Length: 95
Image (cartoon, rainbow, N blue to C red; front, side):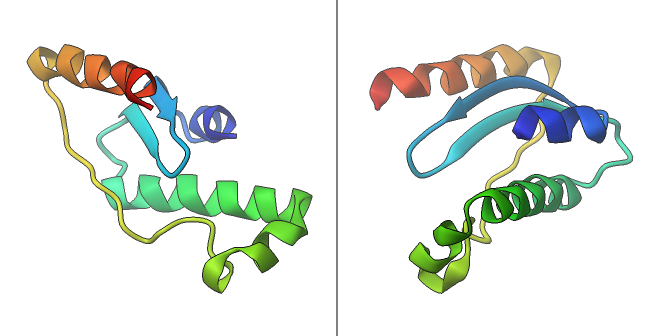
């Protein structure tokens, strides 16, 4: 779902790791996108699609919400990109 959304909105998922209770993403996008808008797009669309396919999920979640409203976002330079990618890729090893 995340890859489909990224393609639809013309941004690229450079690295992704899905954990049991959160997701790490490294995205490349046009500067016209505000980070908060990208987060809303990703969270909103995935929640809508999952609830349409699995309505029982909404009933089993606290308050019926798939995602916590908080998120952490940073911008990276060419220098720090490799470090962020390495961090994301190493997360599965820690789980």
